Length: 211
Image (cartoon, rainbow, N blue to C red; front, side, top):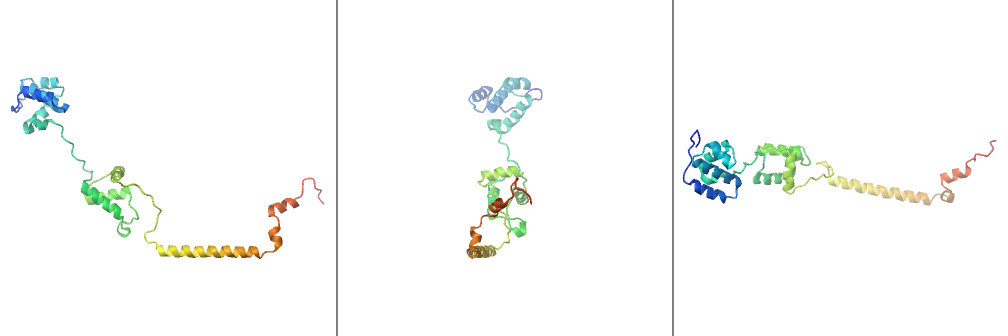
């Protein structure tokens, strides 16, 4: 084909290639079929590519793939998975790690954070993810960010309950003592006006003479 004379397989004629190109829903593959058909008819690489609406190098790449794979090689290939993307098995293992929670003695954590989970992924799966990317992955997996009340991992629930019980008993005793002291107070204490009112009655007016 062209000046370099790249050979093209001839199991399909140019007429057959154009017939298939007209019925091909993939527009990129259809252009490549037209370009190869033009080249099989003896056009130069530049002319065959121009009439098919593509570049010369793109047509050469299409010929190489067509020679190796046939018509299947003219379709776009799926992009390979990114190196940082977790597989299904890895995502399931990560979900188990999140649900189990961190070990305070081994991990030094009481709850997982996104940066710490990224560190776990790098250590276990040898993959690096940004915390923002991991957040999107976990949301798709059904997880959500939970901000619970901080609690020391070695706190004793029984001790906390006993303290609350003693505090409740102390509050009850103080309330009872206050009621008894108010009941035993003289009658005048209970009927006397508040300090603010008493001070208002004895306050000297602006025109009161000074002795």
